[in-house]
Image (cartoon, rainbow over all chains, first blue to last red; front, side, top):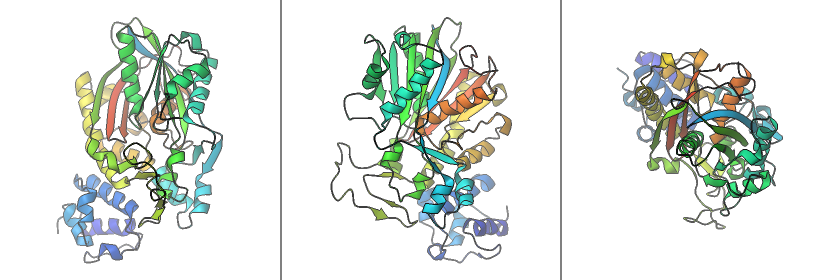
Length: 75
Length: 346
């Protein structure tokens, strides 16, 4: 999955139109970034990159770009 | 002698909380979203005066009424619950009395949740193969609803109350019909699915009863059930696939040799993710939880009962059972299905 596709998947998790997120967005400012979205992100990273991102790692992420880095998504 | 899984029955309390009911209570949490995330249509909730022993007795009576066994034939009661009627006496003792099981029978409670059925099968197999018992009544009974705050949608949408009664009976077979077993424990996960107060460590106080709203709008106090869904999900991703591989290796089998796979029915989203991750064909991955939700240690026997009624289990079928969750605790085993005594089996 490309970086762009990953961003589109996160758009879907936080119920934003496809193409909204670019990476610099702060997670705490996303209205639908909640525990359910976090679980969806864990599943996304696992399915597409075979990477298990722990909740602790996620809590250490401030931006969407941080999430991509945690999921080892290529730039 | 070895244990044979001879019969299963289960009981659900009368009161039903549907997904539509929950959607009405929680605006912004529509039916479609709940169904998409959980796969649960209905949860059965015990009445205020209805406790785990009541559900246990009802399930066991159904087992007796099915003709699988009589109370007089039972020589050991194993009862898995995390919501006992009392701290003491043992709920299994109360169940023995109410069912009219002989006073010569052994009876004990064991405190496990989602992995409980696997551990119960292991304990039952051990009792039978060591000659300590011939007919073990394994009951799983839970009323998690009594721990759950009415304004905590994170867990109200998932958990339901139920009891299941399984007869494990001694048979003279060349090899074990249940096994091998694989167990695992990681107590670091304890805080992630917990009722923090009310036990000996932290007694209930006025302060512990104070409800607090979390960042997702769920309300609970320390006296209520708390589940960190993200941590539990991560735990399953790290543990379940490895456990399945280890079980197959221990048995000298591959997934192709397994006819049906029944995981602890936590929620549909998690189950489907695990199935896809492990490339388990949909046809052999059994899910039956929409009508009752996550009933903790009863999810596996309830799913097995449904599989039997749908003709999914023929004589000799190899069934993989995997339980995982609260503790953290996990277990897995294989069952060689015996259709004799399992009413409705193909």
